[in-house]
Image (cartoon, rainbow, N blue to C red):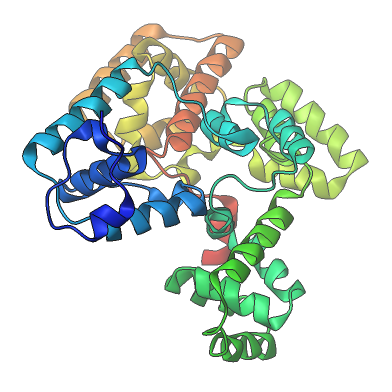
Amino acid sequence: MGSPTSLAQIEGSTAPLRPAAHLTRRQKAAIIVRFLLKEGAELRLADLPEPLQESLTTQMGAMRYVDRETLIAVLGEFASELEAMGLIFPHGVAGALSELGGRLSPQTASRLRKEAGVRQMGDPWDQVRKAELSELAPLIQAECTEVAAVLLSKLEVTRAAELLGKLPGETARRITYAVSQTEAVNPVAVERIGMALAAQLADKPVMAFADGPVERVGAILNSSLSSLRDDVLSGLEEEDRDFAEQVRKAIFTFAHIPERLGTADVPRVLREVDQTRLVTALAAAGPAGLDNVAEFLLSNMSKRMSENLREAMQEMGTVRPRTGEEAMTEVINAIRRLDAAGEISLVTPQDDDEED
């Protein structure tokens, strides 16, 4: 076998590179990348370490062309290596955390990031861009004007405009002017700023619960019998009137259906409930003083279905209060499931206040 083809030979010759066995791995990598790009493949070369990016770019700039025989041989060798490869693991803890995504508990992921000194996964600016504006507003005000200008420049135009709208006028003007002075900022500085901002966003306590206490108590009381719900709310009012009031707003019971469920969503909700349980809930509504709720539901469905349900209600006769309340709870649970899935949209008490 001859010696591998040198870069000097490649640069000084217009002859095709051949055979594949005489090429270095760097030359083969350049051929594969060039071929994939030519075929329209999306390659995330930015994920490679900078030295490898530089090496690949230099190699591609030094090469001229290869013949079909050499190309086929290189691609065949590459395909064989891929077939022989079982698994590729991500590099380092940051890569492993990114690969595992949300499969780890928040507590474990946070602890691993801190222990390994990892404050971001992948591009730190991705984490910054995904942050809520309510998080970015205090962050940008706490930073110096130059850093704030870089942050603003890395956001999408519409989000940058929204963020500016949340800042005091003088602060917004200073940051906007500072954007004009960011032309000379080098990529390394931008990356460091992104890492520092991402670290600040990540450096906050992990919450044990996804929902707040008001939502959790409200959800529990939604599925409770009315007697227990009223008793608990009375106790809450004695302990903390403000908290009790917030919980009352979070509660959604059968009586709230006409004011919070859109008429166009009624048929979708009723399809979600077992018909026998629906008839039970409607039949129990009258004795419970909730005729208006039953009439709201019956008047916002097809005439034929409404007539069938009314006949079934008459045939069912008297319903035990507890049985009726359990059936009403099933209707409420169906509405909440559809609302959580985004298939319907409930009107909130806050929306009512705004309309007033």
